Image (cartoon, rainbow, N blue to C red; front, side, top):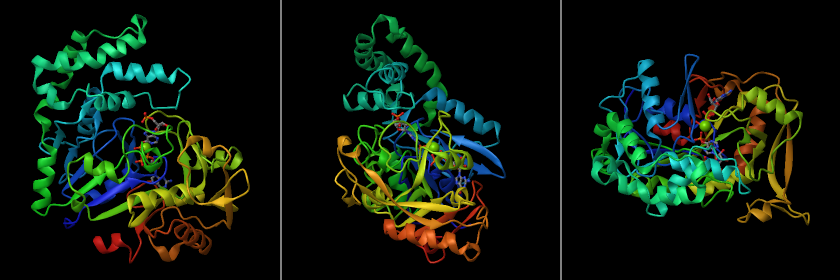
Length: 434
Ligand code: GDP
Ligand code: IMO
Ligand code: MG
């Protein structure tokens, strides 16, 4: 396969777990560099090859392609222990990343007291159903200028001091009963764990800039999704990074001109894990059926995902925020065999008005009810379809309405978890790009 010279972003358009990992894996054979730019091990990206499933949390999903250089950008927060475990698991499966992995010296480190603080908060009234991986506190410390960066590991003499500021604040808040390790032990343990990663620390901005100028292609791998974005999502029920398009630039240091195309990823229905508004949620047997058929249990925490019909209000919002060129529409096969399939085309407020915009304030979500349009289901399975001509007419009608409702065409249709299940839509931007 030839390598592309144009750069592509793959971004989630709902509340995460749309199938970004599958698409990054599928397309990364055509890119020289694959880079993660935000998030941490709250992400769980599943790649399925020949029936074998591999879950990636912090390592970019281009790992399975030998010719792919992998980058971890400055906007990422890293749990080093988990990162090493992931490298180890990949090595055991025959994927050697040596010589093709670079971690930004500006990426922040998730420390044990960040995890303790995350869990402590989740035990209180402000519980938002986080993954409990310390993501929020790691980003808080970054913003408060008390974070510890990968580059600090190269200055062991000052590491203890870098850790001490944030550590002192968390220790004061949680009290002696929390059993936090001392600053000395934290610094010592961190340095010991980090040893194998030290040679991988470098200037990813410089690497990507040079690659771009040489005409090497870059695939930007988003984690989480627009509705979990700290600015453009359902705040405060969001993660702590900018998972939509803006985070790509701050999280790599590349300018907007370095991005050519945006592939937005959405399921043919909606899921959410954790608390927060979800007007499309089906708290009935239909929701249970989608969960069972779609195996909607979190890759990272194993929690059951909340399920509902495709929500054009949130996904349309995400398409606009990110300037999506085309949809990667995933898991159509999960809707096989339903008598009817719903599409949320608007929200009805307490006064009976129907709108297609999402509220900014959490209080304004409470009264919203989904306005659902129903479509006839299809009895011929779509699972594994690789040719648009084989799509049942009812599925085509549903997809036409869906793309119209978000004003964005389909670029890739996914009909199963494996690399080979699905097709690039003829005539789409992706077909022209590949
Ligand atoms: P990500 O976080 O966006 O990468 O998504 P996850 O990996 O957390 O969740 C998506 C799940 O759906 C994974 O288990 C994938 O293997 C699976 N998957 C992806 N595409 C399809 C599809 O078209 N059909 C089915 N049935 N499963 C899919
Ligand atoms: P991928 O990349 C789905 C959710 C959590 C919680 C909220 C905040 O696999 O799509 P955090 O631990 O980030 O502070 O939790 O965000 N969340 C995700 N949900 N997929 C993800 O990642 C997620 N990452 C975080 O469930 O509601
Ligand atoms: Mg996931």
